[in-house]
Image (cartoon, rainbow, N blue to C red; front, side):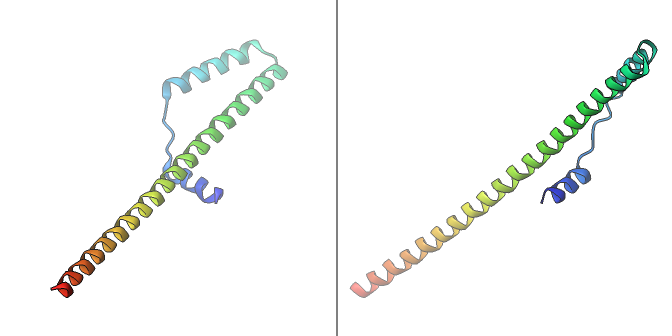
Length: 106
């Protein structure tokens, strides 16, 4: 089920462009390249990659949670409609029964 929801996420979610933020990230990355040695740069990039994975996982989880909420609301509304329909039919039937009893009493 999670795979299907992930596929729906991939199909329907379009991440925002965020050009200003991307430019800032690139500028900071270049500044780090200039002042850090390779091992430190690698460590910083690992931190950034891990943070990116957290953001992506959170986004997917949020989409799935919203989808599940919508599904539950849909099921609840469907059940409510069925109950209303049954109660209307019951009320009509009871009305028809009371009418026939009135006619029998005459």
